Image (cartoon, rainbow, N blue to C red):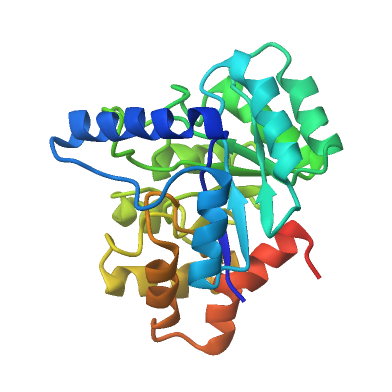
Length: 270
């Protein structure tokens, strides 16, 4: 079994245009093109899952403004639990009704939220952020964070391993999932500040960029019970990513934890 815990899709009417904008951001920041490997519609993700033997994909929407929150969470609830697709919700940290929104996400049966400090332009250790993380913990909701650099956003980085570690002064951290192995392109500081904490990591957009020695060291020292397989589809190929993880020199129990067992516990799948 394989569960991809970090994917992105958009409603059909905006999917193509959204990807074009994001690709334009990458070109502007990185000075070289970066392209989605598949389309960003629901049917595109399902086709990728079938082709690559991915049993479940978790969709992580991002509300880049408060006005987007209602439609994003409606779409998340509509697709959640259908055809191997599970979706988290989202909200913007600046919105006044953040507490009501989180309670609605819980009531809708979603398992958590996605926050993107770069696109949403907030620091992870700000008061606005910490109050949301505390409320999520209270409600039993998981929070997936974009952590580290983003290839389509100029610095400064709003969720570094060090600033994320500050959050642990206020919350336990076991309901936080730091995307991109705790901090994209900042894995030395992941080892310094986050390895060994209760925070979980996912492998989204990571396995083709990090040195295999460091990847294995982080898994060993942090624990395979706190690592989730993820791709960041449509930006990374689900099949190639899964094969790379399967080929790592790890025990079967460690691979099973990463590829599906940890995710099944979060999603409460039998």
